[in-house]
Length: 218
Ligand SMILES: O=P(O)(O)OC[C@H]1O[C@H](OP(=O)(O)OP(=O)(O)O)[C@H](O)[C@@H]1O
Ligand SMILES: O=c1cc[nH]c(=O)[nH]1
Ligand SMILES: [Mg+2]
Image (cartoon, rainbow, N blue to C red; front, side):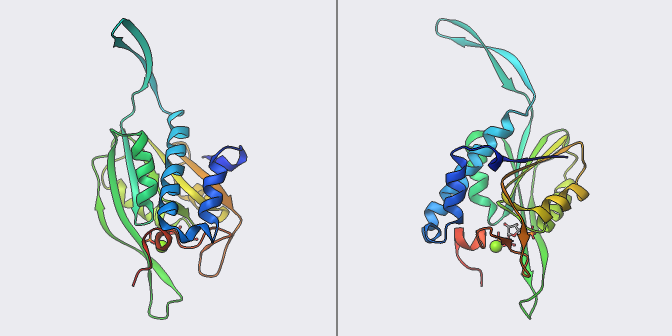
């Protein structure tokens, strides 16, 4: 399985990632959401380089120009709720894509110390032979991504799955490598962090992406 860590190459992406990590800049939730969207746009552009292209002729007012255009049918899959702004960045570029939504969230037990991931909602088109770009800004244990993927597989078999995330833990990368089909999955991360803490939050990470974008859940 190919794992692409975009932080290995310097670009303006570094600034957007550093802003969403920064505890002071995070106070501006509008900027946090917009940065997630901008990172989505950049990763969408990077993924677009890996699609299947065919040359088509485009009629201009003065003649005909060849254009290499991607032919894949794209489905943008998103895990609620933190994925929403990130998803929008992908949709800004893949503007004619179909869209899937899965709700997966950490449901804490009474003691607030342990949790399981709960999936309660899925809305998706058929996925057979399409390219599924599954987006979630945080890949901590990889559990939400794996459950969401299996929930989506009830809608058919995509020909390729691109897992797109902002910050992944190394543990989640290893987990996804073990759980997703090797030849037909690619992971794209704006950065990969070394640790998870006892609550399975990514360290240094950025905190709780869903809460930073939309406020705390009751
Ligand atoms: O890899 P995992 O260990 O499963 O953790 C990652 C998940 O945690 C976050 O969602 P969260 O459960 O906080 O829900 P939210 O988006 O509603 O905040 C994040 O958006 C991922 O979906
Ligand atoms: O670090 C983490 C882990 C899960 N969800 C988040 O939003 N952040
Ligand atoms: Mg959250």
